[in-house]
Length: 127
Length: 373
Image (tube, rainbow over all chains, first blue to last red; front, side):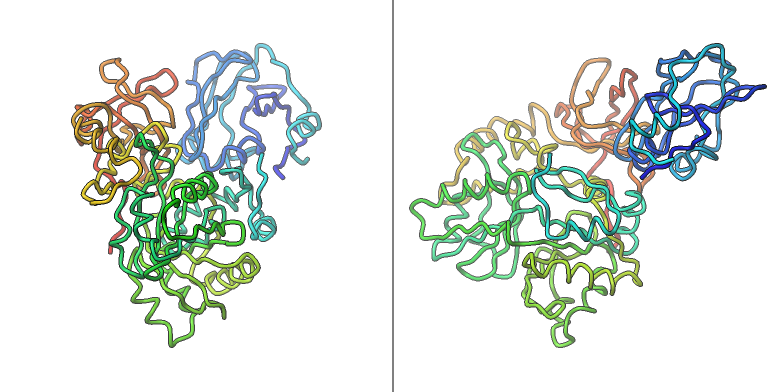
């Protein structure tokens, strides 16, 4: 079963969010989503400096078998994208909560978020 | 949901497979990484459970003449021990299934249809057998099919075959079959596959399937053999430019636009189901000089075309993708698509509507991938 990292918040669309007191929040996709997609081969991320809106699509993730939209779990300005994940999207499969993070946002407002426990209950992951 | 399980289902569960429904069967989609499984087949060997495929024996003095009538090819001309790829069509030329027929004796053929069509094909063959001295026997439920595909397949197989029979394996030609002793059982072995690599398919009674599967893995692991699921099977066949029933081949399509004109033997003296319609389609130039035909597309960017995406030329719809994904071996997106015949020449640049954004693709010659012999 796919792992759900306990210290993170999640959107219903399978993005995770790591908030920090100071500085931008980090966003990625859950292992549940990465495992369901299969081997990820391409990721399209929002541009640095652009503003993403909670609940809106802001990119896409493509695997050998399918493609799915990436949704912003928060509203705010994108300050950084993970160039390593763009160059080697397999990182999103191998380390979705670490080296496979996707982008960072200075949060203006939050969309609806789930706790790790809630997300795992709905999506069948393990904490 | 799936209602059918192969005799190897528990072995797949133990190996950690994730499953998918295919033609009513719960089949392994992948065991770990479909990319690793794909590369495993290209570089060494993959082990596939294809027990969802159908197996139908056609026996009797009229077996050859009957298949000449029921299928579009001239099966009576196939030599004993050889096999032939063919189509079973409706009277209007629509494709019911694509299948392989192995001639085992003068009066005996094994016909292998696709999983989702096996029952339909068995019923159609039984129906078309009226007036012929043949027996049609569907043994799909009792028969498992295990494939070993990849460059080291022969080496792996030989570890399970007595030395006195090694020559029967090494001399076995592509699209041929032979009975040999494998893992102590007398089994039907065919040199066929759906991956673009050298490889074998072994027909085995359900009761013996798991022991054979385990033994192949036991002997093959050191040579690089890994179990491979349907995800890898699909990407492998796509690179090899092979059509998939349901995607490229359908009841509403026909052989000529699918590039399978040579499979239809209009020269056969005897009548066959679909002959009149197919002769008329050929005469009209459908799929050759008019209408649409199946082509290969190579993506110029990184994003892949997927089934049912529209193909555009100057913003006008000129075709539709039937299968598409990133090619693991080649490193760029590949797709099979039906496009207007005047735009089907290799080198032609077309756009695919990738979820609202037009991305350039080039028409290329099939197959995308061809192994070095």
